[in-house]
Image (cartoon, rainbow, N blue to C red; front, top):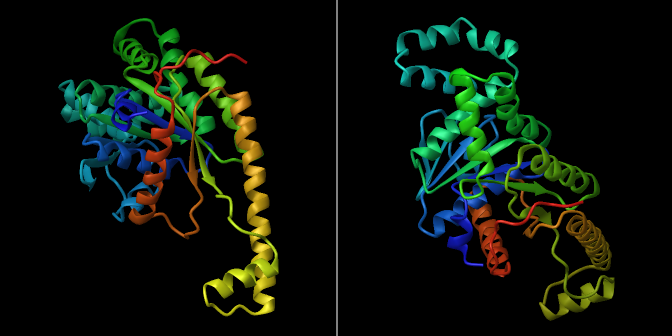
Length: 324
């Protein structure tokens, strides 16, 4: 599939997954891939302190947009900030910050469940309508909260039938349910529990929200090793490379190679189980043996992401509803 077509299929992509699966890294990777096509990208953090800015070797994001890389900008988005923005745009600049300082948001959100989420999603909707960028990538809450986060517009729409809140909820629902405007990209690890949870999340998102699901990102995949996994295989390779390896080192390297091959086999099993239970295309990203993810690592992941996208069959990304 052509990368430019892939990255322009929806104007808002919500990246979601269980905590610890690398969704923030995938957010940076998707944004970098889209920027390579010449598209402008806006990354939005909705929980804050996700460490996304560190992927670009920059300080933490704020509510004000900041340039992260060529054609990539980033910002945070919290309910308080979204409420101030909303009030100021509706001629209530004088009272907006007073309400926040007085804790009015906490009172309202307690009385109206889902209000915080609708404030954030409403701002995302406003950014999309204003064409703030060719592609807006949302670093969403962890999978469990992502469902309630995206469900909140329907809940408020059912509870409140009139007024600005009802109108806001209706417009957000229109955004989430339009596959040309929005889709969710789920991220998982090729392990038993994350795979089971992402399958449940996918069906919940489609059944209860009606949002379009993009390909599933299977992150941190071990690559298979070439060559043998015995000490004598290590010694033979060392001899070819003219490198000295002691017998003990050869044993340790062989054991490490066997472990990695076993991990690769287990991951393959889980990725295949995911494919059987969730009929969506998969994009597999490699495990990086580094302590931190910075610009260099994001470029490596982006190369892998682009190759995986180009290997996808040239069919429409908008897929039919899932069926169990």
